[in-house]
Image (tube, rainbow over all chains, first blue to last red; front, top):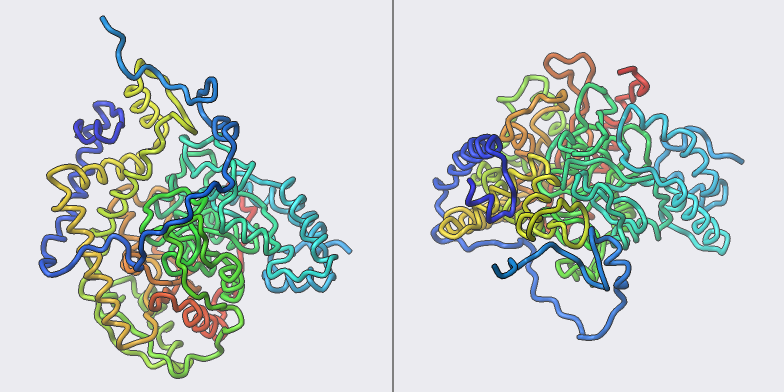
Length: 91
Length: 499
């Protein structure tokens, strides 16, 4: 559970690890019924309505201004999103 | 003249006709709406945000266009919008703490088209957080949306606010979104028509994504005709959504039927209702008999893999949601909780911003997609999805439409489904249809008094049809509605019942 939570970038309390752990175990038991279904000769469907890659001319089109986009950010500075430290400072 | 106080009980068709004929102005309609909605909404809790200024602004635009000689299909029609659809300048919360204060910087295509057709935006409706739920109880925000037919019961979900708004007469029509049943189940609970078009018919641009291969926007209305009118206004190709269908569109509202002669309606063997409560079973048997009285030939069809629908859905939808919701990381929009470094900031932000059901689905989806489990869970579910869609194709070789219940029961009381899987079972009949991408709707088919309840609660009949056959589906539903009039037979109780 802690490994999956780490992959999902989700901090979980000890109580949550127990709670979600048991709920997810229940759900996995539930979805295990899929094992009965023979799918050996069946292809996978990612999306049911047939579609192809959609492209458009590589040309400028109207879009939100930088100020509008940054206006929604929790923190912005000098025209950029500001985030906490990514790489630890050298010892 | 002033708009009548009961304007919100009129149909969209009637309102648009009166506005186009200049018997009423959009401005007068806004006055009437503002006079009743805030008070009625207090008990119903359908709206998270009311947008009276924006409604007035749009009314001015509609009145100017009518004065200039235009005719608009939804002229002056008061509309509600589920809060996972962007409307520029308004809060768009998705029912989540993550987006509690986020103001949409643009308007989504379906909303844009609804307003361009003359709709007047009353406000944004409550929903299960990120559209994950079947009761609206998963909304993480302040509103508790109640069923207009019994305030002690849920409105269904995830589009519960939109369904309650239309069913409770605080909107004429509404937009919802449906991933596994999120339009059809609440429509059934609230005595309204709820329509999910073929996947790709309505642009998802500006709809905050949950499970992208399943999400579809559609209308709630009190009549099939109004649902068709709304669908015709919002459907069609949109270059802003790469999955939007670039296929010829059939208008629906001018092709509503009055009988079902020549149509074969499939009754699904695996969806037999004999094991359900006797009153529920009787309700559906009567509905099928009514379809036959209207000239349809009933045929039994088999969907042997449909029983795997829930398991398939609860792998595919969480997998897609875990990917889609990765964007909520505290960097570009929404909530941020500070941390010592960027990783800690992500984890704390997401821990604080998401509610329990969203976390459960992110975790299960992450697990199903993770190395070592991907083939066993995600790929297996995608194959099961093919098998389910193939079953529908075989069934539709023998029938034109499929009829079934829309939900496993009428609306239940608050906190009645504390086990997540018990809640998931509500969508037993809608999920296989969603996995196959088919157009389908719920139309009122009667009422039953639930066990332990005192008030009759509405029931919904689900009709589904082959891909792209919205005209056939809405046409047939109209014939059934016209002959049975179930919605009209169930009067709205006094909403202002004290809690």
